[in-house]
Image 1 (cartoon, rainbow, N blue to C red):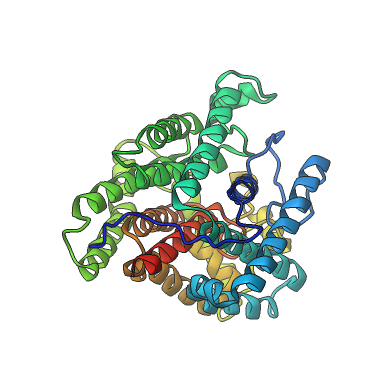
Image 2 (image 1 turned 60 degrees about the vertical axis):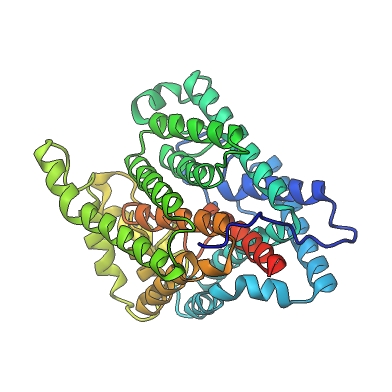
Length: 418
């Protein structure tokens, strides 16, 4: 946290280092991995599986994106060797290996392999654009895409233009997303990035994104995302107030303590508060859902049942749907940690926790403070919201893309300075 030098780019020269190419690739990847589209709403979509969507424009868009990412990766490796990408991806190599190993013990190995592959593609694409864009260009592209997505979402839902507008008035806005919770999650991620990239010299666009994100969170009525967004605001304020004043070790310590404080509040204080207020202390039936999913997950405790089996619609979750029918269409455990346990067993859960804590907190000293702060805020959001929602772990998650954009930018900038 002590290095406060200016961020610099390490983009190298030849053909593909045309900033507009990388900015276009970044914008397209953000649309895909945030899962923003003109959805009809109200349906379960196979967002984790390549080429399963039947919408022709979406199919074409995705096909072009996959080819572009592959071409960019081939060019990067042929021009610069494997060293830079290996350095960026090193923290998740063990987790990726465990995920691939767990596919062999899964209910549907081919589905699990596709899910894991798309997760890897998400991380690689974030690493590529972060490596080859100037930092100011990458942040500007990110914020402008956020601004457009949030603006369109607010206009579509707020004006009642969507076909399910009457339903949204009661349940919450969904904007360009399939469900209000998906909208709330992406809005909370955008709030985290807007807060982390706010600087006195460049405050207008981050401020606009933050305001739109807050409006979106309120409109979506997603309680988990609202609470997680408030937690991130607290993290950013503390991080900025201590930046440059404490050592890296103390920075890690206070962030871990802050996270533990939030966990204790959510597990012990919030249920009591909800009960006193006459609200549902089971978090709309989540405690019952968790019990049933944990029971089923422990049938395969070591290696789980394969990535994507518990964290998405699958044969396993279809079977559990009948037991939870009185709570609605429940296709996931509504808890990221239970989903990881079901997908990859105790081995995968332990590896996941170590990997995330290392990536989010433990390696911050390698990065420029702005990038380290953004990753830490995204990590806090990811870990806290995962206690009540099934966030993507071995799957294409927008948080993974954003974390690796900032990681690659921060690594390259720090190496350039030293």
